Image (cartoon, rainbow, N blue to C red; front, side, top):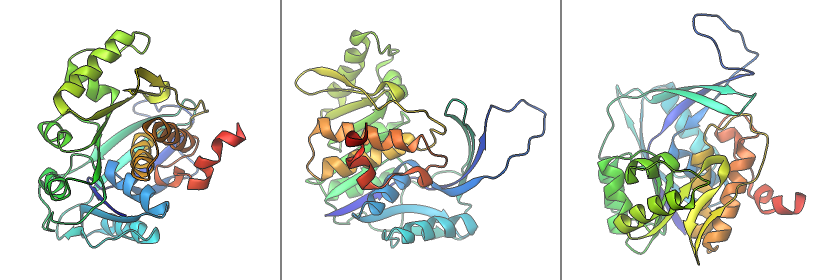
Length: 297
């Protein structure tokens, strides 16, 4: 099974703190973490780490950050043949304040104008596809070239591109914010009608399987009936990349024949474990940790 992931790559610098800083003061911390990031990129890293034949399609600059992004994919034996290195192009970078007291994260990203189409041909064979809306023309080409592939979009931001790509995939796995903006209605997790309304708006438009992630409240979808599938309760210290990791794990399990219910369950466990650790890629658990988690609680 060949997995192709198309999306944004960045390089993250995470600054762990025990509180959120106050403006115009100086702080000193004991250390920081650096690693690659980006929605589909983190998903690709997880898929490769878990042993899948994974190809990442993205663009980086010919700078230190770009080199590190490529090296990290090589470390987990992901194919880097479709990672384009653009001379004079600065690799996107993100600076993250991780508040360990409550698990929140504040992200500032430095990013140049997006590249809509990569030079690599989109005519690449794939059995499993994960896209995040970046490089949309290439993502569309990959999806159209592989209509029978199991395909997932990490729908975090509502744009014309995510609207279009969402119609081409089998699974739209979107954030609560995406669902609210799409349906023009706020979600109250205690109000089932608000969840159903947003779900139906999404489903009617995309005509595929829709999952709305609700952060620490779980995920909402329709199987036999509408249902909130709860997540695992943990003490969070850094939620950076938790959504990316959920989407990567979702892609892994749905691609390996798990039911939608089990896929969401194990993706939730993967994400929950990740928020107990600092740093997005450093927080990705081993597959055996996820599969054995239920036996430990």
